[in-house]
Image (cartoon, rainbow, N blue to C red; front, side, top):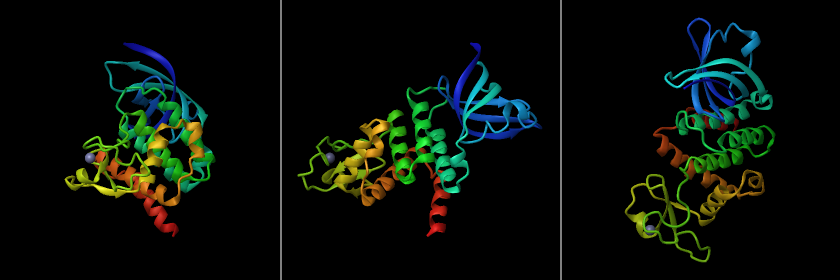
Length: 259
Ligand SMILES: [Zn+2]
């Protein structure tokens, strides 16, 4: 099929191509994650200035021929440039992490219902909110949930017992990135990567995966649950993608430099 469409997109990255073109990766509401070529983008101040930078919300006019991998980007109008993020090195690093995670986890050319709106909402949270580390945790959880990758946190993934489900049940629980969820004590003994996990952290992650975005800011976990949640999600994402994200390493360097 060959068609021209106008679509709202989040710019995920761009590289120079040839003498004056740019190849842009974007996540669009209608088409999912695709690559497009913006011909003459480095010369045309009128059509493309500032609207193909990461992260931006841009309304694109594209021509898509399903037989070709690259769409043609004919025009772009900036809807939201997130200047509050781009003007702050820490917020910019965190937004780049969100974008890299989105880029790595989403399949090509497959729109996921609600994902576009979710990413925009989290970029706004990052721009306006005062707990960026929590915004990143909630973003990871929502992204994994929408893509169907969220680890299993309600009961043991090995034997289906209710590990962690009962606060009164003082049994130890564990997490395994390889197995993709919680493990009870006996199942953890035969798992290669199980690490202990507080019942409260499992509860916080599970609750966050069920809440709608507007209710998430009300969830204020203790620092220890937030730290442990970060470790669990980070182990899981690293296992899922098969390596550490470049932007994650960058954020850690920035964090160490600030101490
Ligand atoms: Zn078990």
